[in-house]
Image 1 (tube, chains in turn blue, orange):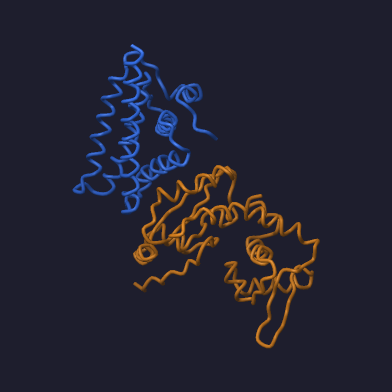
Image 2 (image 1 turned 90 degrees about the horizontal axis):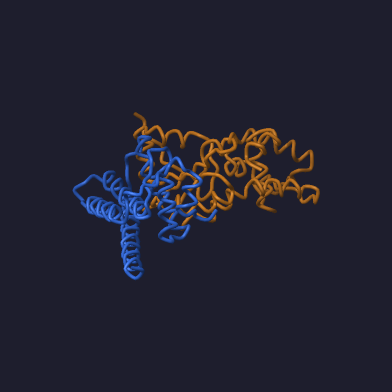
Amino acid sequence: MPLRALLELVQAAPQAFRREPAIDEGSGQQLLAAAVQRYEAAQLEANPDPVRLDTAYDTVLFCGLALLAARGYRTQAKEGRHELVLEAMAAELGLTEARHDEVDALRKRRNAKYTGLTRVSPADLKTALALARRILDDTEVWFTRERAERLRRS
Amino acid sequence: MNNAKLTELLGGRDRVALLRALFLQRGRRFTNQQLATHAGVSPGNAHKLLARWVDLGLVERSVDARNITYRAADDPALEALRDLLARSDRLLADIRAALPAEVETAVVFGSVARGEERAGSDVDVLALGPGLSEIRLNAALRPVGRKHECDISVACFSTAEFERLLAAGDGFARSVAGQRTIALKGELRLAAPSAA
């Protein structure tokens, strides 16, 4: 099934998203800055590996939240919202299905902590950090492009 | 057709495992012991079923100076059975094909391996090999899950790490090592935990 765009997801799961006129690209930029902070924390070798994987995942999630905010949406505390945010993010960034599969596999790997699986292999940490870096780069490019587009229109 | 339906139709897990080994490797001859090991069935039960299947013409028995061997019969009427077994095996074949080269050993465990899965059951896979990323492996198997409309969940370890967990009495490792599995790649040969 192809990735669903944000508006399709809003229609399919209206309980998970809320349109808020008060939030805008500025809110998105703040969330993007929060994503950058999390990526920096994920890189700190002093942190335990499970914490680094968690913050690598948070980097990706905050990128998704930043994109949503830039489009005027927030998410609501509903089960499954992370999955929806990541799908909307993937569609917005134009990720391939294979890349989205990696993002979603990271989400599931991160959620394994709730079932007591706290061990994180070096290979998984490396994958998570590389994925977070890539999504962060893609999101920063997206914001730059959006800003340029807005300036062109004004 | 999933494993649970096939198991019900053919009258048990051992029958499915033995018929799958015999009919999906056309022409291959097995001794009773080889077949039992390959299918994960006790040699006694394999012997009993093979004797019955030879009488019925499902299986051909050959005797040479050293061994008694068995192979699937060539009867064209059995092609439908072969097709049924192959269809039920397609998910496993697709998982096998999607495994990256660095996976040394992989098995299916859980409800699918026990022939007890229901609609919506996850397909649980254990993969052993050096430096495996569970994230990458789970992502690589997503297209297979989409094709077969099921969730495939892979747990990854190095062989040494899994053996350490087993020796330490880890619940997950003991549970997988102690239950029926379906081999996807290599064989799950683990060093026996040392006695406490």
